[in-house]
Amino acid sequence: MTHDGMTNFIKILDTTDSTSNITGSIVTAGGIGVT
Image 1 (tube, one colour):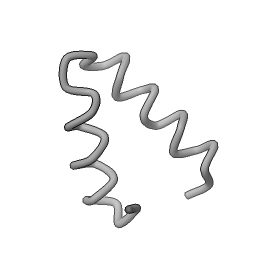
Image 2 (cartoon, helix red, strand yellow):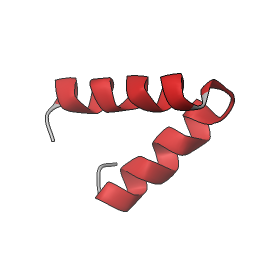
Image 3 (cartoon, rainbow, N blue to C red):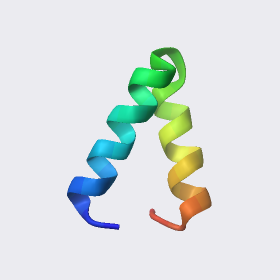
Image 4 (tube, rainbow, N blue to C red):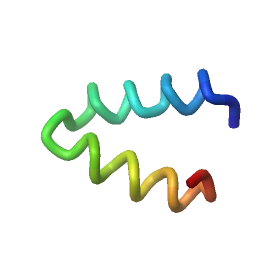
């Protein structure tokens, strides 16, 4: 996944659940295998 793709993905998470965007980003990134 490119940096731009990851940024866009985090933005999607932020839009979906702004209250958990940080945790969601970490968990999702870990699940994908992106650290």
